[in-house]
Length: 116
Image (cartoon, rainbow, N blue to C red; front, side):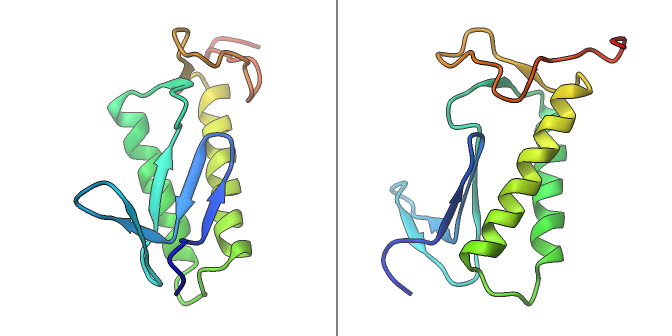
């Protein structure tokens, strides 16, 4: 495997076919994925919501078991996870961080569960 890990990058999800070394660098891996979620801190993460996103990531990875880590498969997992974040936001379970340096409502306007 090359020194540069295979990756998928969406606005809020970055997936690397790599492991994180003790000094914080990424080391390419043929059989491990690392998730970098919301690198711009655009959302407020409650522990329960973060756990649900991590569980969904594991489900998507488990669902791809036996398939090679390639651009297509990583993009599919990343896109599915990005869609899951949108669902959480639209359901009012995830909310925008109003103190974020990026405040552009990139996933649409948030709704509360009471919204029509």
